[in-house]
Image (cartoon, rainbow, N blue to C red):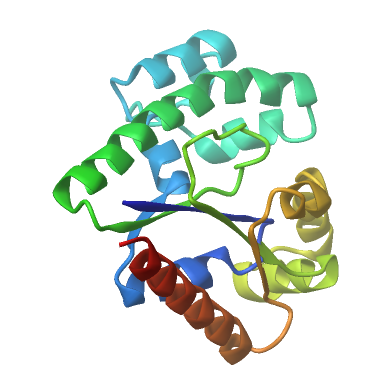
Length: 204
């Protein structure tokens, strides 16, 4: 199995790159989806969140009110750290199981673990390659406004709340520049896939 860690700032093109690698045949595991799975009703993580933040962070049906909890922790480093201390270990455990399962089902699989908080959450899976999508702040803000409907202030706050991209670039094996056209991003991703294929042939 060949394991790729894919990371990058918000609205930096991670989903586009992940989708392209999936089209080439990679197994895609999305950390954001796992973060939702580990807090469904009945999970230990959700029980810990209620214990820490109170039952008012739940909807009437017992599911987590992510928007309400997000507003509470956003901008408060101490509360965010408490939430991350609950969610991140649960996501790590689930992602480890899913990566192992992918390898068992196909020992030759290329697995892309799409994890926005690879740096912040100290994700330490045994990656063969770490890929970082890179876009300037203005492009990230513009995409959040145009594609996700945020107002300018919200978009800037979201971008600025994340770890500085220099920390991601420092651990990158490959950087994909997503500031240009979609075709440019795709061509870089295609080149990456061909590089991986050739590298694995050389190992065989």
